[in-house]
Length: 103
Image 1: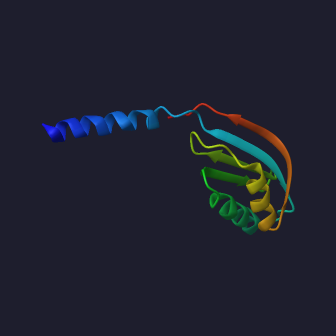
Image 2 (image 1 turned 120 degrees about the vertical axis):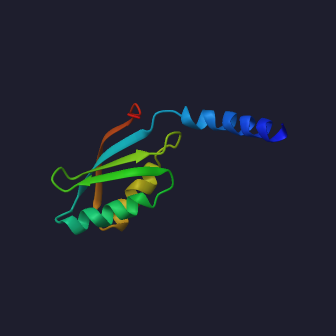
């Protein structure tokens, strides 16, 4: 009986995690990238940041798209530093918004 109660309590604690807010997505320009290795280095640095769930860097568009874990807020200073540390220049923020989860 105690195991059943413990299991039910555990399941109830997981429910808020699945109902978390929509993830924040930031898109910003990145200048100086010229090849796929530039994209790889930029993505690698951005993926290391706390709370980052997905990163997509476009060489053609010169844009980095960073999707945060639901409930996490983007640290723009850390994002800009990660891009600079990869050897490139962070530019204008194109969008910074929560997007509905597609799950």
